[in-house]
View 1 (cartoon, helix red, strand yellow):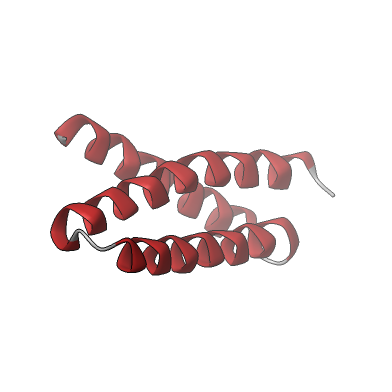
View 2 (view 1 turned 180 degrees about the vertical axis):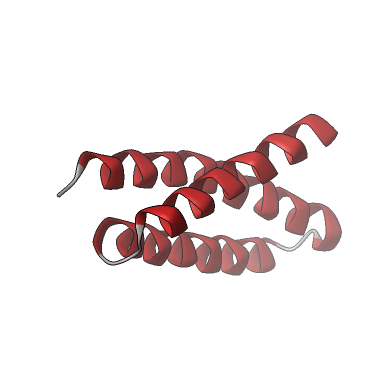
Length: 82
């Protein structure tokens, strides 16, 4: 496996993990129900895992880096805004 795939997936895991946590917190604020938060977390982690597997196996370099970088930028903006 190429090194760039591992680096892109690592960036995706870190940024995506923070994004999932932020989305779960927002769901808790809006609903106050732990069931909604649990479903939100499960969906987010599943999507993140699928994206990481695709990054590690089949996505092109340009798509992988755009995806990882885009999520990192969105998380950084959301973190600074809140």
